[in-house]
Amino acid sequence: MGIFDRLLGKRTTSPKEEQAKAEMTGGPAAQRPTSTLFSNIPPVSSVDFSPDGKLLTFAFFDGEEAGAFVGDATNGKLLLAISPYKESINCVTFSPDGRRLAWAIGGTKTGETRLAEVRVWDSGSGGELLTLKGHTRAVVSVAFSPDGTLLASGGYDNRLRLWDSTTGKELASLEGHRSYMSGVAFDPSGKRLASSAFDNTVRLWDVRARKEIAVLKNHAGYVTCVTFSPDGNLLASGSFDKTVRVWDVPSGREVFSITHPTSVLSVSFSPDGRLLACGTVPFFTMGEMESVKIWDMTSKQEAFHVKRCTVDCNSLAFSPDGRRLACAAGDLFNPKTTFGEVKVWPLPPA
Image 1 (cartoon, rainbow, N blue to C red):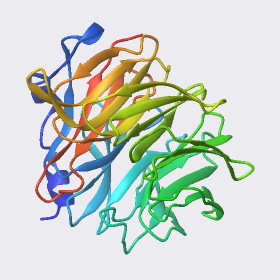
Image 2 (image 1 turned 180 degrees about the horizontal axis):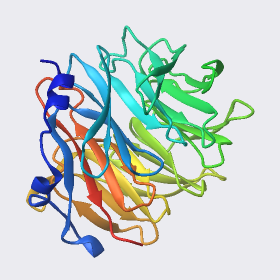
Image 3 (image 1 turned 90 degrees about the horizontal axis):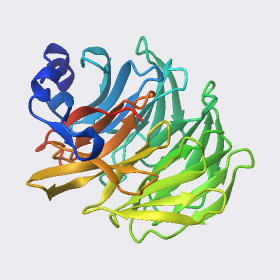
Image 4 (image 1 turned 90 degrees about the vertical axis):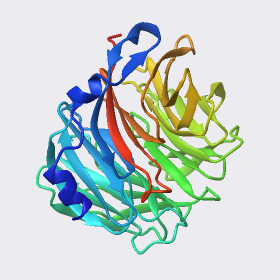
């Protein structure tokens, strides 16, 4: 029986069962429970909320099959399963109107792959809408522009590509990074793109001019992720150098950095810009393993931390109302011998 059959046939762990096992600690969120919507599943690479916050999509890879699900963000009920693939799905995201899903596809262990493409699906029916071909090695990140008309993708061919999200036409192939790309993000205006890569840099791009406008170089290790603040003035990047660096976008200056115990794999701003969530390789603290920290952007101090996330936190997403934080977790480099999970933490109001 394949992983799709197993997951569709049986829920693994209910939120109510997990609420008794874990809590959020520190600061104003002490004693707040967490829900594990799915556990004891293959490693999960990516997670995203729908624009209305009612749905979650996530992707997994068990070493043989990869696929994506859409489920109820409250109770974990699976609503849609999209056919399994033999290559890993490295990133999944909803379009701004919630009607489409985009995937970044390709094997990442060596970068060699039979598939290196972006696929776009109808989020309601699961019907395939587009296949975007142009990358020559694994595609690891994909993002819709704020108005939904463009897609940006980055891959192990070191290229940032821009696509028409309606027709699938490739609009640009941008060169600059000198090693594998790891992340792409549009700013809220849609006028700028940020990209991260294993050349230890973050790069900023002018979307209309299709050109590089800045190279941010302070990281001392592979840069794994990048995200804009809701107002577009700040940019956060995470790295194998164990830091998250926050940059002033207009000037390109580093504003401050946060050091973590282990490599940083994911970053996400809350919708109001008040919090910055960081996912890492697990570390041991206060008698438990953890892999998520949440920082207050005003005080630059840890706002609170969350317990019971004991595997790599590969992807983070705040709900649109900022009241929940989702984590996609699992060891993607050992998918046959390790487990994954999707967790959701309730957050206190501002």
